[in-house]
Length: 220
Image (cartoon, rainbow, N blue to C red):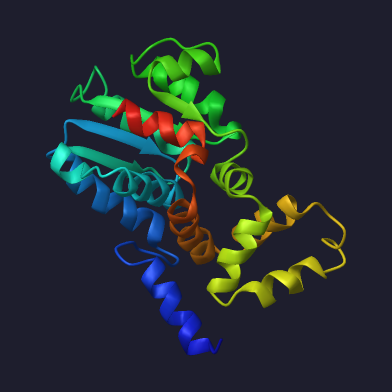
């Protein structure tokens, strides 16, 4: 596959989303405009999480805009407190749900308490408030759900299999578990991370949707 074709496939996968150096701030700004008329907000750490939730909603036949549900990427767990305070019980009192990586649990837990959403002690308590935790992160959840063979097929369809094989042959990654290699492959480039969030959700069998994604969408 030539470079022009690969670039076109990448553009299609990212259609409707921002990418590049200023993308996190721009994505938050755009989502906040939707929050102005929303009844519910799904708070997520980054754009890839937003893409995954919104793509899954489409697969489920849901129109989040029509339902008044906004998916808000906050630019990392460290930024979540201000938005929970703004849209939670002490602020606009919107219905809240959320998704975070495992290393963001303590930050989200403290933010939920500070914003008056609840006083969660455990991950189970957070889930009871509509906030769900990926075992590691979104990529890890999708890698386990789709499986390495299925993911390699998707990568090949985008003309990226050669790049993945090159990573596998790098001394520091040679012989490592394929799941770890795939995780590094997706995380090594921000635009790649975003577009494969959409592509892998589109590939997933309905019964294999990661439970945190399934649960956070159902909570909104």
